[in-house]
Length: 84
Image 1: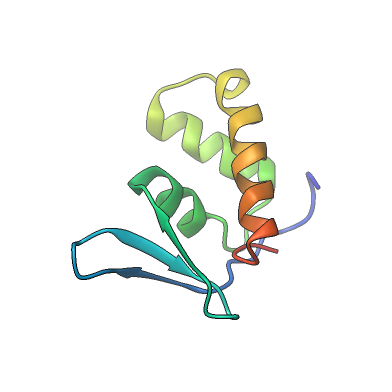
Image 2: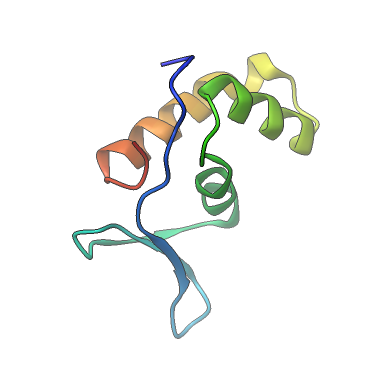
């Protein structure tokens, strides 16, 4: 997984109440918070390690602290057909 470039799928919208919603190509919608939307947005054309580094720098958190949660999040996004 480390060397594979991630690709975003679907689109990001705001619903009537202003909530962020990711919608996959099967038109399944998932309400997400700003962190999930940000991680989804930076996945395009980057490896997992690049996403971890960028998120670590932005959040001023160590790579070791963010690696496992990001791996879990990206696996969930893959399962929802929002990242491949």
